[in-house]
Length: 53
Image (cartoon, rainbow, N blue to C red; front, side, top):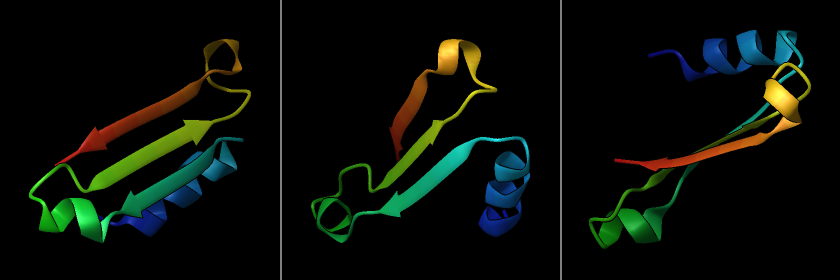
């Protein structure tokens, strides 16, 4: 997966994106990845957040 290409494609559509890898959660064997997206193209300009393995 090309994270940079995904982030650029979303940004070109007016969506602000953040990917985070959390070393502490990874060491604790918890879901280390966080994805956050926001911007006008999303319905009602909502904030989308998910934590994933």
